[in-house]
Image (cartoon, rainbow, N blue to C red; front, side, top):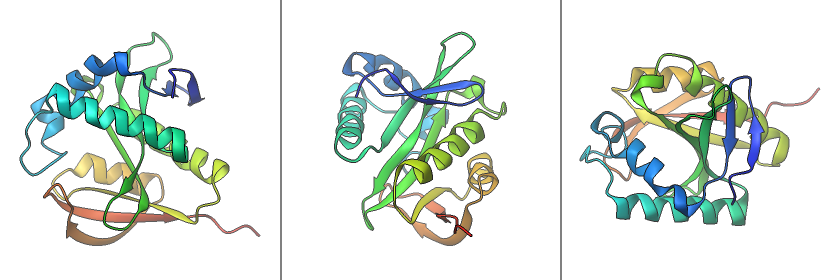
Length: 175
């Protein structure tokens, strides 16, 4: 996957990753305020963990057209976070996720990216649904899932050890 744009929203460019952009991911997931919602340990990511994730996202995009994407602001090209689809291990379902640098919280970027991903997903795939989940204590992230039309389903402890509220979004029916 290259750094060419997959698609754009009003304010964002969503593009693929290159391995030489690992420092951006380490900076994002290496902060305590982001890492606390990535696993129950809340430990910031090491360079090794970030590289493993990045390689997985690149492979997932190459094999299934899914994966977490780089988010850059259109106005100035600043890297602000990542958003995209992973595969939820226990069920194999596509799962939407996002993380932004703290200074970009509260500006509607996560909702804009998630809504763009929702629209792209149903336009570009034949899949019937995708899921999303967030730590039950992460009210802003849970609000984004609701704002893009996802419906709450259940609360469960996900493989990273977080107690999460799960959501689903089914393909809109036509007609």
